[in-house]
Image 1 (cartoon, rainbow, N blue to C red):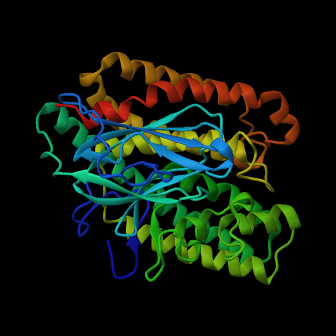
Image 2: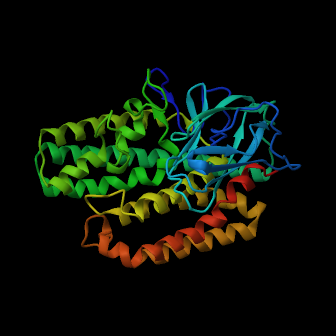
Length: 415
């Protein structure tokens, strides 16, 4: 990792030079409405298991708040369960360490089922950031030090899986650099049809690995400032537009190619900036390493992305290529699971079989939308098709999310 260029911020992985952060947490939303009471009881830690922290987002009495079941846990694996009960103002939570976003959960719409993730944390003073809450930050303490990573046959198998997944991430980033480069060439040539095709070809690569590489910020920027947030600069959407920062990235190009249906100087500027930022992302990701729970948390995050942005039609507002990016999310999640599966089969063979069967069910459901005559290889996700088919796809994903949500804790606590 070339730390002279960037600071790793969101979903921090084990990277050389980032001592004190073990693994990636996938969010912790903590007591943003709480008072940071140091006397709060640590989350229960079953023998050989993970500490438990419940996070609830509420709008009780007209005040949007995060409620955390504990503000202190011992170092080691921690399972967080996040529920948005009724807060429309809070849709994400982040765990910060020294201004780095160690972990996060996004797309937390009110009324959706609770989401869980497991992370291995070192001792230290953390901070929860809950944008939209009346009190949006609170202290969170991890006491002691995490136990040394266990060794043994299961651990060796899981380690082999994480190494293989790291290779997969690198391959997707390399392909994305090429794909975005082709998009830039077509845009620079002013060829609308070729640019639309190149856009469709380039899109899935980021979607396969987004939850593992969406956490870098430019030097000199805070983690919560979108001006330096690489994920924003690469993949912001119309629905996530920060007025203070403006349009950037691949969806700015999408808007011009499919919405305005023209290429102008602005389109060329967006495409050039996108190519630069994707190359920087590839360079930074060369230093990333993963823990088994990182893969499981990342897979769960990709499925949450499907539910929140693809099925709703929010992601590809102008091109309607949502089903192609939906397939990319599923493929990335399945790759992460496949690299964990040999180890999980030793830990909990029934769970491994259940998750595998649910992936097959999702792919079977998605297959009927394949159409090689359409950009991206899938039917356009128009408002008309969403109206008739969104519920079916959502149920298929829900059937996979439930067993998959158990994998992170299983692999993080395996002995």
